[in-house]
Length: 297
Image 1 (spheres, rainbow, N blue to C red):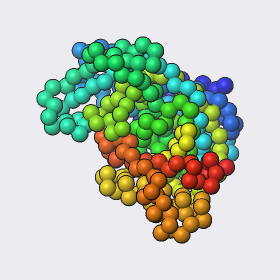
Image 2: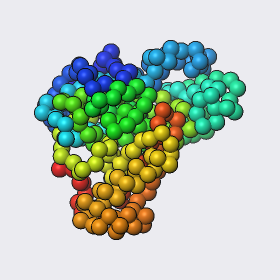
Image 3: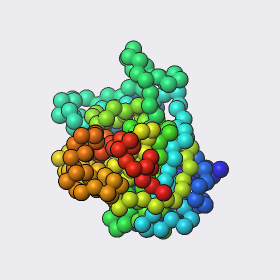
Image 4: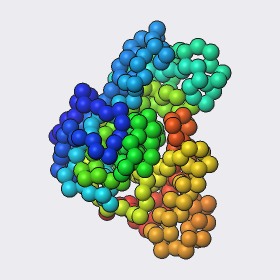
């Protein structure tokens, strides 16, 4: 098994990134990740306003996968996400959906015990997840805060243990990086933070063929979700609906109009997050309406 340590991180997804390690397809890889604040907040006296935000949202990597070429997808199986003993949640004026109602920056460090955390006496069940996962983009450079067709800061709760993430390859080797793990996060991540944690993420990384779509996809249990990002919720929803219709039309050999109607009957459109530079919405397609459990070979 290959391990990539958190001394090797990026803060931008660029087309010409230099890999820090490489693997053969199908190998196990463990990514040691920092929390989104790079460990700068360790107690409740420290706030987001007092740290170096240029060191925020690090992603460990990038990893080169031998043989991955543009047109392929990287398949990243999330096999395990470790939990530490504590995490960080923070707010600050101007940040998040209700940032205009916040006058003072505040930090809370909930204790983690097993699969729950305790926040001011409230017991919260945890669902460890990966916030940032992406590959080298085709042309544009993206901050690790942002997201797009390359993946990036998707902040999608379905990217958890037992799921598989499919990322469209744009550069030779793919150049995979991930980080920004959360012990828990609600859809939307409305205050701009989840339960931010450092973590070791165990993965299996492979190369597969995929459908004619150009967005990241996450497969979990009985559903397949296309993760689309844009400047507004309306735009992101439109892209998600379009992607779902395209998948159903191709997979079931349906007329576009019929696939559109089936999407309205069966596909859920869920907000992943609304606080990053772009909004992410996922089209969650039940596998039972697809012609095979996975549309990736």
